[in-house]
Structures are given as structure tokens and as C-alpha cells.
Picture 1 (cartoon, protein in one colour):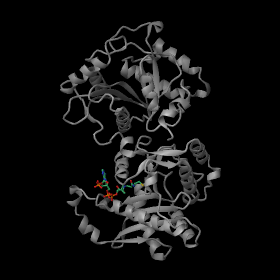
Picture 2 (tube, protein in one colour):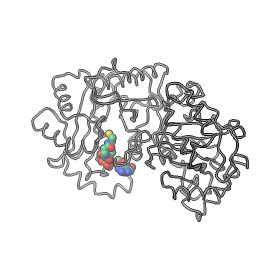
Picture 3 (cartoon, rainbow, N blue to C red):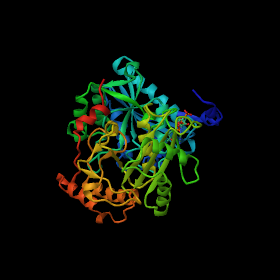
Picture 4 (tube, rainbow, N blue to C red):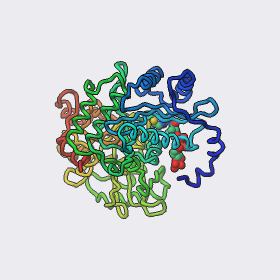
Length: 504
Ligand SMILES: CC(C)(COP(=O)(O)OP(=O)(O)OC[C@H]1O[C@@H](n2cnc3c(N)ncnc32)[C@H](O)[C@@H]1OP(=O)(O)O)[C@@H](O)C(=O)NCCC(=O)NCCS
């Protein structure tokens, strides 16, 4: 269905001059493939670990011509404007999971946003459906696509922006298969790719909410076997890890990509406060005082404006203060105050009041904060929060994928406050979460934790020389006792897992 905006675009004129062609091994098609590869494919996928060599694509077409795919299939679909390839899809059909899988879809830069991508994808679905009828005598169950997870991979030069890109796939009907997908290394010279997710578009309505784990396992197995030849799934540690994970569950839930991005319609409206004159500053300060009644660990409300100007003066880190609303014109119903430090983020305060409280939007806020931390470009791949050991926040954060650092964490005095002796410092929990969906406890080096703590001391607590602080020395001493140079976590992994990755 077209919306008014796209109807006004000059789709018609351009579309008239296009022809559509599935490539074979003919001399002419090889020429088209080479041109498509050099002009459109390569510039769109510059990551060496994700790129396929053109010789391999030719090899797959030759393998297909020899009948090598059996009940499976492989296709390179190209849209041509005169003799110029302007869009392409590289895809497989896999009979065991009865799924089409889009390996790559790309539209040439001058041709984007004319609905050509949508048209190519519909074509790919028809081709996969024809394969399903031919191989199994029934309709197609699923379309799959391996996509970059924007929370795990900052790419400033990508078009569209990786967050928007996921939104486009959402519009195309794809959802995230909620399991820890890793693409095995494509060759010995390449590395496994850990910043991808596997998305699925259910064609069979029975798979709308969940896909049986055995179907997902077959899809991954067959995808590796056929699309990553000569890689053998049985020899791939990444495949074995995924198989073990899937074996423990009956089905894999499908998550809305927009919800994963924290951008579901009507989710949260964010207003970034940039200075003391912003009318929302007072509203946010009131919300803060209501949510955190004065205690040893609470800030004075004018501290927000001070944090804004301090971060601007410093420049090495970013500070954000957000006013949150349920609707753009509604009252301020929430606030978030957080820092993007070099290498890690830090969540200062987040609070919801009416009408946002209790409406299930906290996960969306976490996603939006993480998006901001990725966009700030300080190399952060996860973030810390401190929370009160007696309150319910610990459980809420754990359910979202935070893990507690196994130390007795003592909070330094707030900026402007009197420093206190180690024994008098309030004891809080220090939690950490990697950006995006979390399936297991993170592998975090002690060095990374200590570097983040130094930055938290400097930026959040105004302690310029953390190395001289007895509280920092106390934390460092506790961390040093953890084995293998890695951070140890307090909560058993299985506990937080249950809440984040549930089987029906
Ligand atoms: C992703 C890509 C294939 C889309 O191709 P396209 O021909 O522009 O797609 P369409 O014109 O059919 O757009 C599809 C929808 O996405 C929206 N969209 C496209 N580009 C967008 C952008 N940069 N920002 C936000 N929305 C965008 C369109 O408005 C349209 O939405 P609508 O149906 O609500 O109108 C193209 O941008 C591209 O080649 N990017 C580089 C390669 C890539 O990222 N491939 C995907 C990973 S394999």
C-alpha cells in the first residue's frame, strides 16, 4: 500500500524504463553481475567480514547450473535500467526449514526511495514461494534475512543509518528471531560476525508469534551449509553454540523490530534539554525530586544544569538530559539523565511518573538511551547504572539484561558534597548491560571496568584524579581478586535469562 508521500514521488517514470532479470551463467549475465558487484554491491557492504567475493557468487551460479542445490535453490535477481544494474537481491531457498533467505538487498544510490527495494523483496518472496511449491508441493513458511544489529555496531557512514534500516525491514514485515545469532567466519581469513541478527517474516500464519526452535536450527544449519560453502556447520563452534541454545527451547519468539528499537508507535517522545533556559528543565527537576526523595544518594535539582555545562566544557564525554512524554503535546511524564563516556555509558537517573509509569515503556527507554550512546560515537558498547540494593530497580534492570558486578560498590560523594571515609560511603549495586538484546553474562575485562569507573568518577562525581580516591582503590582491590582478568557477575546467568528469553 502506498502512502500519500510516496505517491507524490516520481516512481512511475523511473519504473517504466526498468527490466527485471534473474542471472544465469551466460556470458551476458556474468557481465551484469560484475557490473552490479563493482558499482552497487561493494560500496554498500564495505565490511570485509560480511563481503562475498564476486568469484564466489559466480561459483554459486555455476553450482546451481550443475544441479548442485537439489531441493534448495540460489538466485541473483537484478533490476536493470537500460543496461545498468540498479538494484539486486541475492537469496537462497532452503527446503529443510522451507524458507527463503535474503542474503543481500541493495538499490543503487540514485535509485533509492522509489520503492524499488520493496519491489525487489516482493519478487524475492514470489521466487521463494515458487521454489517451495517445486520442492515440497506447498506454500512457503518464512522469509529470513541477516541484518546488522544497530546496537552492536556503530557505522557512521552507512546509508540508511543502521537504526533506520531496521525500521525499513520492520515495514517489510520482518521481526527479530529472539535468539543469539552469530554468523560463523566465512573463511579462515575472516572472523565470526557478532553484530548481526536473524530476522524472519512469517508467511505461514501459524508462525506469526513464534517459530519452532527446530525450524530455526534447520534454517541456521542449512544457511551455513549452502550460503557459506565450504563451511561445515558441524565444524563451526558458532553453530554448535546456537544449536545448544535452541535445544533448550521449544520455540523462538518473534520480536517486533520497531519495539526492539524502542520506536513502536506512541512509545516515547524525547525532548533533549540543552541548557538552563529550557522550560522542561524545571519540570524534569520536579519529577526527579518526586521520584527520589532527598537522601544521601540524591542530587540537588540544580545539578542537572551544572552537568550540562560541565560536559560541554569538558568535551571528552557527552551528557544528556531528556524530558519524556507519552504524546508530543502532553505533559512531561518521565526523565532520563545519562552520560556517554569513552568506552562505556552511565545511566544517572531514569524515572517515570504519570502518565508513563506502569505502561511497559521502560524497555523502550533503555533502547533509546542505548541508541543515543551508540550515536555519540565514544566507542561505548555497554553501560552501567547504580541502584539502591533495597529497591525494586535491581530486578527491573536485571529483567532488561543488566548484570550485577560482584563487588561491594561504594558510591563516591556527589559533586560539591563532603568526601566521606570508605566505611561511611553508601553501598549500592553496580549493574552493567551490553547494548541490544542480552542472552548471557557479558565477557567484560577488568581493565574495561576500571577504565569506565575512572570516567564515572571524573564525569559524574567530579573527581579529577580517581586513582587517588580510597573508594576507587577499594573497588580496584575487589576487582583484582576476580579470576582470568574478567569481571565476575553476582547473579547466576540463568536467573536473568529466564525473564529475557522465555519459551512459550
Ligand atoms: C535498504 C535499501 C535496499 C532500500 O531500498 P529502496 O529502494 O530505497 O527501498 P524503498 O524505496 O522500497 O523503501 C522502502 C521503505 O523504506 C523507507 N526508507 C527507505 N530509505 C529510507 C531512509 N533512508 N530512511 C527512512 N526510511 C527509508 C521508504 O520510505 C519506504 O517506506 P514506505 O513503504 O513506508 O514508503 C537501500 O537503502 C539500500 O540499498 N541500502 C544499502 C544496502 C542495505 O542497507 N541493504 C539492506 C541490508 S542487506
